Image 1 (cartoon, helix red, strand yellow):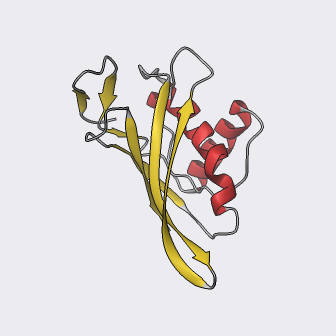
Image 2 (image 1 turned 180 degrees about the vertical axis):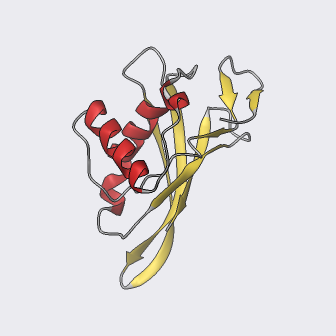
Length: 140
């Protein structure tokens, strides 16, 4: 996690960047539970000789967040850019980064299941919105 800021009129503390040190591909599968996802995430990072930082388990101070991202989709034989936006809500009092990544994976897997290696590169705060919103940074 890096810079912190308070949004105008927002009570929750906002983190400038989240999950930027975690390696993940969104084309894996939908995970039925949090623990299975955590094990898969740890194994994936271990294969890349990277450790999961314990900070991924620290509580964030928000329960709901909007996620926005762009991706390319084939429509009528042509590749077009698509912009998605959706809300994710924690099942707990507040998120931790692991739960956020788990719910995000399960929410967008269907978009990327036929792609090869849609890499997670972090979540970056979009400060121009009134609601708490992060841009999902993707790579291939």
